[in-house]
Image (cartoon, rainbow, N blue to C red):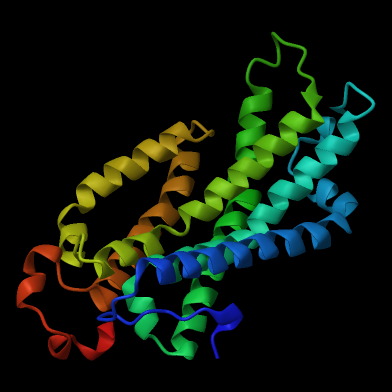
Length: 263
């Protein structure tokens, strides 16, 4: 039975435009419901959530977050809960996008589809955890300590929580790169061979990203580069196992020729 009436099209099945729009509407409704449920659950523990996001701050700032208006504590709390709800609901959103766009999902069994959901969720949670325990403390130490002899640094609560939640969201999305690489390969836009051939370019891009992120010293750069290199290697392997034929060679390909691993 399809969840909420959703029925995924098979690879060779042609759906009318109205059916596509109906499926898109249902997936949007599921995504909104996931956000609402996440918001309700996190608002019930908003005090704990604020403490968790304030914990990576240097000790001198943990008790010195500023609010400058009577309404700011309330709206900052709502902002924190909202962005945290996006973090929690994003794995559901990513799967809805994956299931709607990638034709191969329609041919997968329920067990394999659940494996896709679990993989997306674990990668995203791993990215958020990496951002929280590794990147966020380094970023806060660097940014708050930069020029502290010249400036009287004071930190507004809204600015800190906005920075922290945005960084964690970016870290979680970064860890979804292998899934995006696999999806592009499955659609035939790129191949695993192309990923392997251009690994030097990927290393340069990864080094540039690590240099842009806060830190500055070689150890911090290496610490930021290692998981990205591992993610690129994982994406290349997934593209080799699950990738489809390239679009420029698809005319000569038939489903009967597809290896069992890519079914």
